[in-house]
Image (cartoon, rainbow, N blue to C red; front, side, top):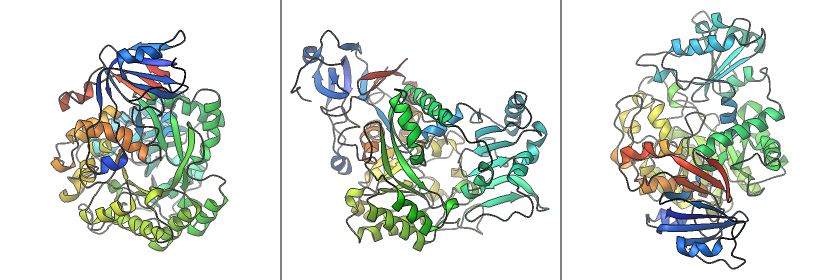
Length: 554
């Protein structure tokens, strides 16, 4: 709450709202504080992109002038703009242009979509698709192979990415275009799927194998990427999202800046530099970091640099996440780490020395152990606490991880929707599965858990993510997640606002409705926090406001 110290006429005033300010500090969240000012019949004023008043609707009248846009919320709920702390925004935009398999319930459904789109293609044109998930096709469903799709479009290379983004399916035409034959060796940190006779079956496991086909697939032009950013913004804004950390896309800063300068960027994008194992060893990655002209914190309020992203392992669905113990369904393996401990330490150390924040994809608990050890090593160079290095995913929390995480200020962007909708729980040992992606475990132990989706792996719908975080429902089967992994509705709100702002070092300017913060706001049609958890999915976004500008209206 506060008063303006300059001319009171605002650009925008929201009146008569129930205002959930989320006015907390990160330290308070760690200490377990969940109470913050909630204002009935509240008013919020925004000028020049920032909040200049938070208080009663009556007092907000003083900020209304002839040029002020006034929104009467009529008692509806006003919350800070939602922040997704791990979301591939440009890929979300690309999905909207290609085949989307998220709603397929069987291989037949997938084939029908491919056949329909193939009819629209000229010979030689590529057919791209995303988000097939055999785990959602029923008990015992297997991954498709190229022979399941070869007959549908033999004259068109087809490339379909799994929901996890760690597997892809290529038809024969795509394999031929990439020169992949029975004699092609598996790439480092990847695998080419094969039939019993040695012929490639079209499945490509992990990014290094997927890139064999991606290298010959048509690359989107700058205008295609700018349009994807624009289209992603329309979807994200409709879900109340005003800011994201977009991993893997620091090299697309050019296109983000074009979108920004055209006024077509409608969310704040914090971008990461992806260290890709397919492009060289640890020494090559260290040289890449040294050659970069930017570092964490570079940019402005719309486009900025977050940190370095390192991929350390795969996913449980294909037994590539690096686990402490052998897999339940394949006791012959504990998964694999993409990097040796020595190389991981080398890259994290170099990033830390250069001033980068580091986020490491670590899904397996053994991978998380490796990353924490690397962060501890970096802390020996200079204090890591304020750098806010983090574990991306870390879905299997263990008590023996928490001391190091608290000491080094390590947070975790979690994805409750993945746990609910990917169907991996039944593949895992129950002691691991019950807490998978459970934000409550981290929050109860004083560790910052940010709300995220990893979209387009699953939908970026924040309300859906909050529902799963609160109820821990299993949308695929009837698996029972643990009670301690649940969060309260107010904790879910904190996760997708203040906590997510922690990962981009923006918690002093985003994630809460306070004077001086960005004017990023969302009007909801109901108070989902005070209602019953089962009513959360009924919540609708009515307006999304970015820096005092309405970017979505239902």
